[in-house]
Length: 145
Image 1 (cartoon, rainbow, N blue to C red):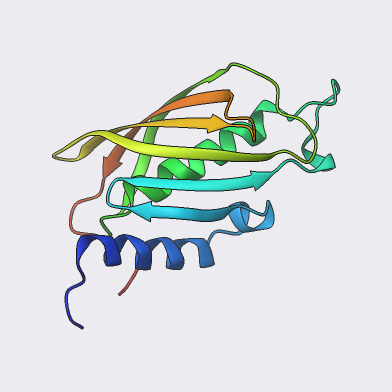
Image 2 (cartoon, rainbow, N blue to C red):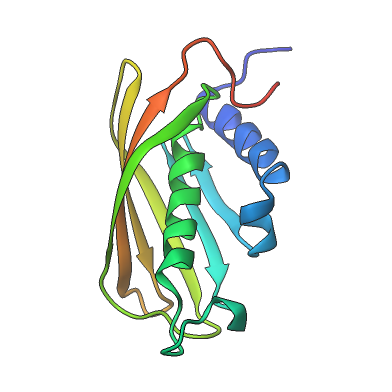
């Protein structure tokens, strides 16, 4: 196979990852854009995602942000896993809102990476932020190409 340019590689990896990611797919997540070290995904808040206060449960916000993080750090097709995350919830997300998680690479050196993810609501307000640390497993592809 001809070697892909970095953008085409990221797109191919994202497509194949999503095809094998039931957690993200079954929650209706979709990739809006992906490139080397970055990924933007969306998810609509459904009734099953609400907590006892009728707002989106923080676990679903974290899952959306973590998925965008995973797609961003695997965009080079080098198998990469989360080493840790911290999440801050800043505002509630409500039923039927389409949330957007934008993950960007802050640093990538050796086997470690650092990524910031911002989750926003349709009004552009920040709902949550996630900082993720990644660990690459050298010599292993994320997906076969």
